[in-house]
Length: 235
Image (cartoon, rainbow, N blue to C red; front, side, top):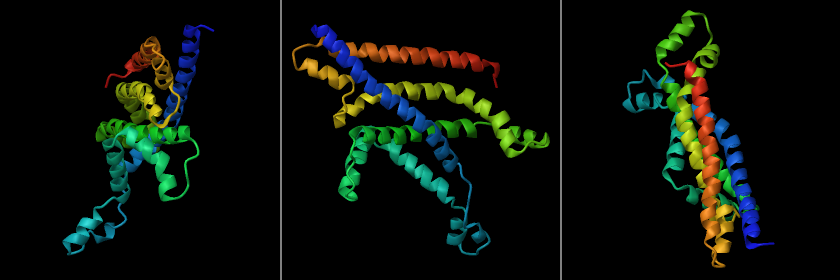
């Protein structure tokens, strides 16, 4: 087998690992991000009965929405720290703190990626949902719709239209971020290319760009197609 064939096979197998990380992250982060978004918009206030208290502290506590506070704090931490650090934490923290070592490095990578991107997706969802004017909800109530009907029939189509561009950007970024898996010795494409670099071959390292460009090119075309399909709504 020629060096070219070995490099091509190795890089293709390595990119398969990148694709697994990409696919599993999307499948987990998209629904998880929606749950986090609803949590960050929660208006549940368990201490509302303190509203009429004469003490300022109790009145302040009455306005606290714990689910929203906890969720937004979580999102702030995840978005404010490097993904690489989060991968190390997921891999090593269970073993060091709970004496439950992470058995698979790929599992640690998948968990870290899913949580990280769910936090970013949640902010995109929240921005899309909160960007819809209250007048549309009121109009739905006048027409006799329930809150669920108003959300799924009127609000959701508009939210989807608004979030497609930022979601597309994040998903394309995800493709490139999958290369971070190499920091915990997951054999993704760049790690495979490095093995050939140590043998004095630079070609395979530059060739990795072709895989990423091709994948991101397909995604760009796909999101462009989706945006055109959703142009029936121009609100």
